[in-house]
Length: 487
Ligand SMILES: *Cc1c(COP(=O)(O)O)cnc(C)c1O
Image (cartoon, rainbow, N blue to C red; front, side):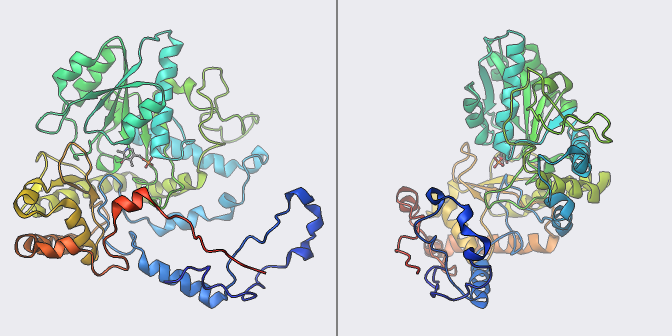
């Protein structure tokens, strides 16, 4: 397939917008004017549409089919969210416009804060962070600010289990902490004895991904938060995968002090293409004074809707993002929560766990499941034994799945499982789809035993075959390099 630049024909399709000279080029000073034309492709509207339709056909998304990317919650995003978030009152606003002209938007933020605090058991929330990882970073800064405010400055360590999401240790390091690894037991849960040994006067806190990356709910959770609190540390809940527990149990009630959510996973904003996302951070009241600062929308005293989390105090950690983060993602999340209602929210998590458990049970007829305990919204297959026996790896299975028309699971993560395939079917898949997926996995297992070469060469039906992943990572070609000559 040709690039759109290669389809460009000089002078074609250039009449969509008025020429520059009509709108007065001389208002731009000469040092700001570009010397060369920007090199936009010139193409007729029909060809433009066909080009992008062709690209759509070549990509794969949640709307194309099953997408079990573990930990990423690639579920169906209801269209009504898009409808509401494209209302002009939400899209045609400016963060600096007079406060009394944006009451509706403030209401959205306030209501979203109320519902999400209710769901998580927290007291206050900021919507500034624009991703889960940035939420983690923000939450850890709250923990740091808290200890500093008490002059408790020897607390430099954050404890993180080896079953945590990969962003957890990275965020802790970014926030200036030293990361201390807690090993998992055979059953995939935290080694409580080791935790007790490690928690002490230098512990700033514990970061817990729950359910962890094996899909397992930490069963000693109350004891875990108690041990950390007793040592003087705080407990952080990575709530990116809240669709496993929402409406069933609340991190705030389990003793957690801070949480981040991924609105672009659990609360149904399309994601995977690099954003925009939203990773709001909720906390208990005693941490609220440290929340990020939002120093606009603060002046009006007679406003009907008080702005959530206006924090102009000296103790705030400052801003982590301009204004209020990605507002339209919050609109989508609020729409989702309000259309589902209280019953719908808990039904969604029940379905997430039921779908995952069903798929795990059926796949375990052929495949080995790592740490076979009670898993929640996801589970991890290990191809270690199969690889030893038949020479077929997790990568080979993932590539072969593409030939059968479904997206592969997350591969080689979590790192505590060898030859891992991490499967998260999500709550929006039907029984028929899950059964079809079971058939596909069974056919592939058949091939593993009888025709392993088929897996080694996969994929063969996709527009691009198996890539040299090392070369792609080491010498990536990310730019169209041919000289573009226009005019
Ligand atoms: C996705 C995820 C994150 C990171 O979220 P981003 O929005 O990708 O930064 C953190 N923790 C868990 C458990 C996740 O699944």
